Length: 212
Image: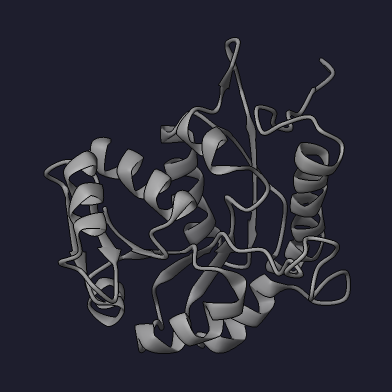
């Protein structure tokens, strides 16, 4: 599968490296594809990885991960060009700069805004409720961290679920894209537990199911 990464920081870099190391073709977008930082990322990701401009990354990929900071997201989507028909994984959260709340929430969501900015794209909200360190290793003493995702296209969601499962997550469909209205506040809960309540970053949510 050809995967483009828009936003090659902690989240995009971690997921892109793992997918490339797992056999997928991955292109990391950058305004400076020849920078030393990008060269180091490509070297770590291995032979299945490359770098390119935002537009080139998006156009040559089947799936595009959006992992840029929220305040740059609209600009990044515009720079990607026509995304109709592509699967967009929206891993962003509309946090306020001081992490005291969210800019969009409960009655609308960042995921729905992304869909409005990329008409015709198949947007799936995923990878936004956990930290990059959990993306690097979702195994907790033999149990997998929960990865919640939502979207309006069943085939797109199935593709994202497979990518999450490959990384070791327990992938759980949370419903249509409007469910991003609850997934994004859940991400803020993770952040507040990690930093405000002092739990640190080494925790994740899990689902416990009672036997029928």
